[in-house]
Length: 298
View (cartoon, rainbow, N blue to C red):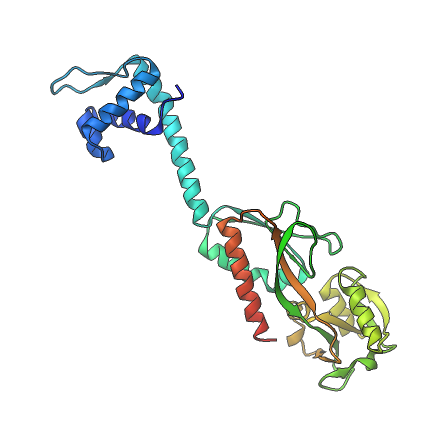
């Protein structure tokens, strides 16, 4: 039975429905001799006749063996059709994609990427997860956004450099860039000491600023609420500031720092040597496009 092919079953079904080899051949786009050869091959594989051929104008009829083969053959043809449809949809960008992200990217970059993917591929299944900042790993994810380089067997693409800026209450500092040294001893609300935060605070210290950290939180909006409340200022990356709406908040002012602190780097990662789906490749293209658009307005 391993010699039975889908084309043999398709010919069997067409003949059973049309009642003749000639009409089945026309429907399938074959010559009648080709259809006859396919049925002969099927009968050899099945070990018996699948059609009674009365001759003349009378229609051919399935034999009992033919009925058994057709019953199961239709199931195989349906599964093959479903497989072909799934493969076609896969190449068209459907399917599932799992993306790891973090707060700033979730607020600023991913909404545009997700919207475009869903507009282009309404049937796609997008799964997002925000990892703990100090525990991010690629795992089974298709793509991972991270503010730094993930080591291991991964490929990465640097999407943008994200400069650190000062967010302060209105009137806390003169308008315009703020000298870094003015933050020395000043109250500051800040992220926990994970990811690039220790490195950023060390850079501040090298620049002569050792602010007094009075509160730490990983939630950007919480930090900005404390800035509004007068607890202290915050030094945050531009992407986090943009995503929180601080740029349009008339209770806050955003200042450049002089000298500027080294920017954090936003990367997109995927597993090295692993073939990406069309959906994942498109997500990478869109992330690059969105990040490029952000760079033009910084």
